[in-house]
Length: 315
Image (tube, rainbow, N blue to C red; front, top):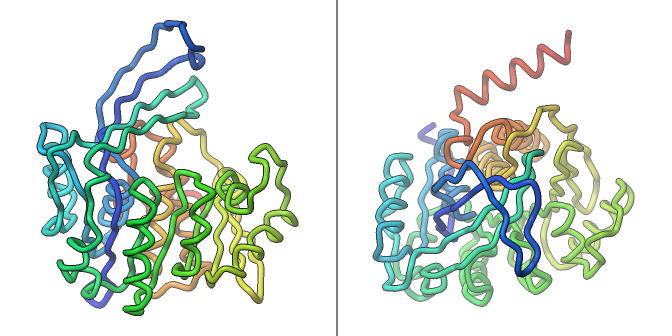
């Protein structure tokens, strides 16, 4: 593992406050919920932990509040063997995500970014952490102008840049010129193309929309499509990677687990198709367990999962 590329995740940390409900309340309505839980989260932290648990050499840069939530986040990242030597703290509250889960395991999330908005590009650049990394991973839970500055800096340093354009944001289109790989889900693919998010997507339209994004600079667009798997689109080819059949319990963090798995596989020198297939297994495994961090597999767990899935298909 010592020769693997170093992965740096720059992004958000949020504490997740979750409960289960049959439906979302309308304005003015109160509903009873159940199964409240408090958990570590935030797309940046999730992706860093996902990559670390899979054996990646991972550092994380983010900004957490000087509060109990922030202390808990730092302790969690340490326990998961993520390098946090360049984490920043703020007098704002730690970011928080309010997660509503339905009985089918689907989720909707509200985020108050808090201290995440106090991350400063100059401070990050001065750490020289980007210079000492090989793969740099970004998401969209921080200020988009900050993300643009840090992506641009990483790009001109010649780093391999993965942009997970989530949460969905039309304004993220301006970031694509600095990314080598982007991995939107179907909703994010539509928004980046300024399309109606209710548009029904088939393989042909997915490919067309992905090729439209390639014009802005990325070498690869990897579309994650849930149970339908993923699609890898480059200038020269379009490859469909089959989905993994599982019974979902909690889909929160599935995209983050996929991104972490993708970064680790690429850091180990796997091909793009191999990397996406590996990330697909990581994402599928994560939805079969509750909460985000506890659902992220170790390398041993994902190896067993891949072997079982392969044996089931062969049988």
